[in-house]
Length: 73
Image 1: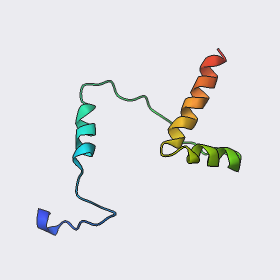
Image 2 (image 1 turned 30 degrees about the vertical axis):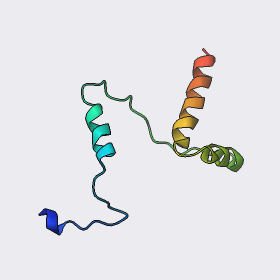
Image 3 (image 1 turned 90 degrees about the horizontal axis):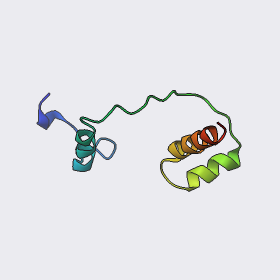
Image 4 (image 1 turned 180 degrees about the vertical axis):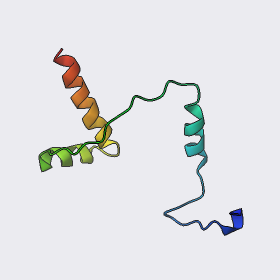
């Protein structure tokens, strides 16, 4: 495919430099620990509270669960 054949849109914009740099910065670092995809049922109010905190709510939920696990040892 040639560059002129690539159709850009709001859904598929041109590559952002910040995104590229973020990928390059990972070189040489240890691979991020693997995560497992699950289905988890939580109260609607709990999920809405995490979502209201902004992007990254799933990461925050994971951090809370990890802190609870570490505190329980």
